Image (tube, rainbow, N blue to C red; front, side):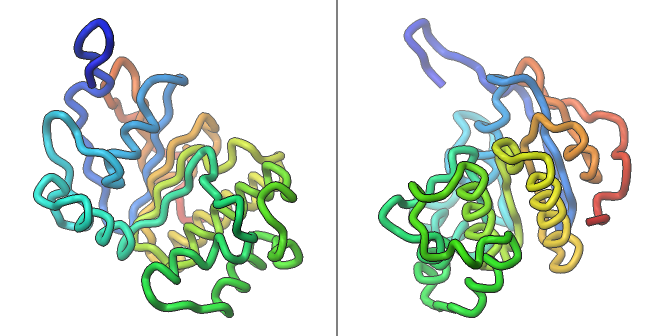
Amino acid sequence: MTGPEGEVRILDGVDLTVDEGGTVAIVGASGSGKTTLLGLLAGLDLPSRGSIALAGQRLDALDEEQRAALRAREVGFVFQSFHLLPSLTAEENVSLPLELAGHEDPVRVREVLESVGLEKRRRHYPRQLSGGEQQRVALARAFVGRPRILFADEPTGNLDQATGQHVSDLLFELNHHHGTTLVLVTHDLALARRCRHVHRLDGGRLQPLDGPADDGSAA
């Protein structure tokens, strides 16, 4: 990217392959480019150099409309800042991806909200929910379409320990039971170690760490 003092290189020679159904964690200091990398992998941005393939398709060969359609079909994304629509209830926020895809499923929406412990809060608006509850709504929205690939930016960063553990379990249940590919950015090394592959981003370069504490399939 270009800043006031010229080109700023956020990522430098990153080469990453994520196997279908795999679990990958990216750790690193604040400002190291983890969120930027996640956005590139999900097709939310395009790199200034190099190429990215998502679900077998080169993103630079697609226009924005085609990339959006690919994300709608294949991708769930949990943003660090939630990105909930304030004018919609929790239930409406969760159902939004299904509505955009043209197949509403109120039963599925209820099931997912119940799985994150928010069935009784489904008619509340984001302003009426705590930060942790908003995070769980964001997770439910990402889960609802049973995505082929789930990208999560600090998925437990705003949660207390017990809720964070529950959310972590949900992520790996989705991977284990549905074969969902999981790519997450986290400061929580214990969460990262649940993934099969762990990489550290430092100085714009991605380096693999030692193997995980378990195989990533436990939930």
